Amino acid sequence: MVSVSGMRGIVGKDLTPELVTRHAAALGAWVRSNGGTAVVLGRDARTSGEMFTRAATAGFQSVGVHVIDVGVAPTPTVQMAVEHHRAGAGLILTASHNPIEWNALKFVGPDGIFLNAEAGAAVRNFAETGPTRADWSTIGSLSHDDGAIARHLDAIFALPVVDAAAIRNRKFHVALDCVRGAGGPTMLALFDRLDVRVSGINLEADGRFPREPEPVPENLGALGELVQQSGADIGMAVDPDVDRLALVDETGRPIGEDYTLAVAARAVLAATGRGGGAPPVVVANLSTSLVVADAVAESGGRFVRAPVGEANVARVIVEERALLGGEGNGGVILPALHVGRDAPLGAALILQHLALTGQRLSAVVAAAPRYVIVKAKAGRGGDLEALYQRLEAAFPDAERDRRDGLRLGWSDRWLHVRPSGTEPIVRLIAEAPTREEAEALVQRARG
Image (cartoon, rainbow, N blue to C red; front, side, top):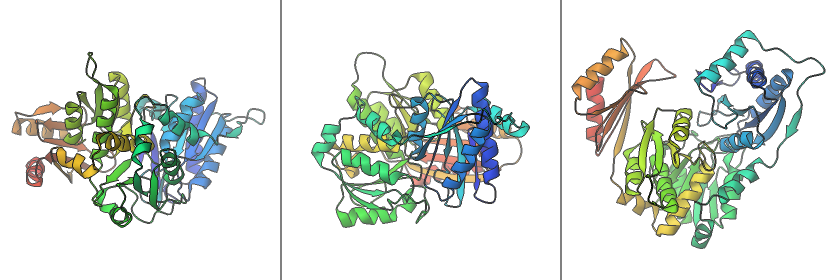
């Protein structure tokens, strides 16, 4: 499956060392065409990662590019390393939340943001036409960066909006599930510096996921049990490449990933202060829950939506000069740190909010308006433009957004209809105060 900023596939079937080498060489050629000389390479803990790292290194070196290998590290760590080294690009070998048999190549630009459509097309063109290879005297070199994770954590603690002392004073007890991905060492180091006691499961970074790796409520039953058994204040789960953070309250109940960004927004807006100027901007995608919009409004910010996809959200954050952004999948982006989803940052902000307000997570959730999101699929046949026009006619009182399919919005509910980027289907997503109301929106759109 090919996207704007990379590709993913099943190891040994779709994704092979030969393919990885060819596309690494293409990314390296793109770097050279832009005057760059170096790339940063990192990976998650999947069992194929070591093999693909060697294949990618050969591809880069074959076009005369210097490779800076940061090893097994969170995706945000690799993104920040690209900026730190002023590299021409980055390659992250991770299939994120995909099942264990998958892996992927994610291409990062020199700004630390995933490649846009134009740059991605240029890299694919190099892969199709074949880049110019280096001769014996211009083969690229290789070095290792063992300090990338420590720099990442240092940068989080240096942020003015992070009150580490308040978190340390609270003496939190966190139940942690890293699904045996890349997150264990990083999250443990973060919590150690915050004087947080950890009860953990699946902290080994060996890539042998014991459950489906996406941190959605249906996959967090064991973490909920750990919270109850250990008496932890909160449960936290990260995905294999550590850019998404999901929460479980002190009763052991998963609360849904949208609350990660909502609580983080409250923490950052409270730490920043309202001042007398324009309200600070928070950006999220078109399918993010209204719990985030409510949190931003109640905290004095201005909420802006972007098309679905981290790269799209990141670029709107830059355009809007936003204070914060993210996605409803547990991704928190603070541009003062870097313009990418960051689970360690999210964890610090969540604990900070609980420390400074004295609230339990269940109380934070209970105090906010409740919504239910319903997701469905429909066959993709006929003219989508005609479909959108019929939907607009059926809901004339809705606010319309055509940047990514069609989103119809009201004050307390919304409907998003968009073509899938990976399947020949149309996705139907609705949110409303009750499940019945959300399902009614989806069924009317389906009809």
